[in-house]
Amino acid sequence: MTHQKYAIAYTSHMTMTALLKKHKVLAHIQSQATVNNQHSGIHGFLIFKKGIFFEYIEGDEIVCRNLVNRVKTDKRHKNMHILMHGTRSVDLFTDWRMYWEQPQHPQAIFSLSPLLSAFNVADWQMADIVEVVNCIAHQDLIVSQRLNSLIEMPTDTRSDYSPNS
Image (cartoon, rainbow, N blue to C red; front, side, top):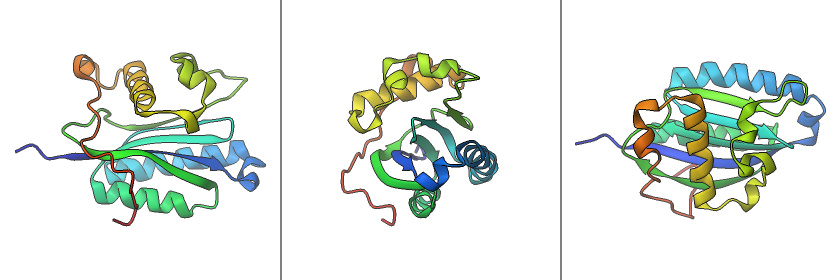
């Protein structure tokens, strides 16, 4: 029997207080999350652009839900919205990464898809989330051996998600 993995994608906005120290806050989030996620076995990515976060994570369901709960109460985030969640048969990512828009150091990741370029996360549908996750996975070559069967969406995409369930 295959052990099911849990996947979740959410969006949130950076608070005004955090935006005033954006580069310092983002550097702190990156260093803290890299260590914590590696230790917790969480894989995926976080993107920040135009004051908006989009994160896709995979791992143990309880660990992922605990992370979402921490982010939900984090004073650097507001207006969190779960975009999708559920189980999958295989991890798509093998580590966790963070990307953010830096005009002085443009990252190619934002040119991979019109969705990433515009970054109107609030308007994304399930197919858009799939496209973004696949673009990131392909770009990072994290799943090169799995590119033919990239993302199979989680089997449970309940809209009644509660981080505490």
